Image (cartoon, rainbow, N blue to C red; front, side, top):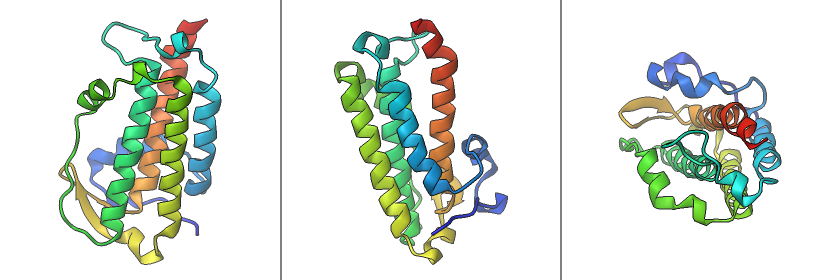
Length: 175
């Protein structure tokens, strides 16, 4: 199965930031590649490096990795609900509250990477299982309209954004 990028009519304009970071191509293949990219970029960090914060009040790299996993699961849940035809408005969430509650700095970086890869593998399994007609089903999340087809692209773009932040703001500080 090959998905094409969603049309602007399939999502609220406020969600376009998630699509901005999604590269062109086979979104499912790119999601799988991105999982390996996360492991390659962050999996080799020491515990001290993974606990690095580039500024006071900012997340650590462990927090960032946990955030990627949490959002992956939330996006996948939203895709499941919308793809199955559930039009119940889905709520947003407070990513800072999630980060605080997760206590990612107390977990080994290898476990955090493994957790992200498991979440991404589950996302891909769901995305591959959805019938063609599911992708154009409309839904609502955090008060914004979208179709199920948007969600794999949002997941790709969201993670790409945070990986760029890791490369630009975190990793240079580790050297």
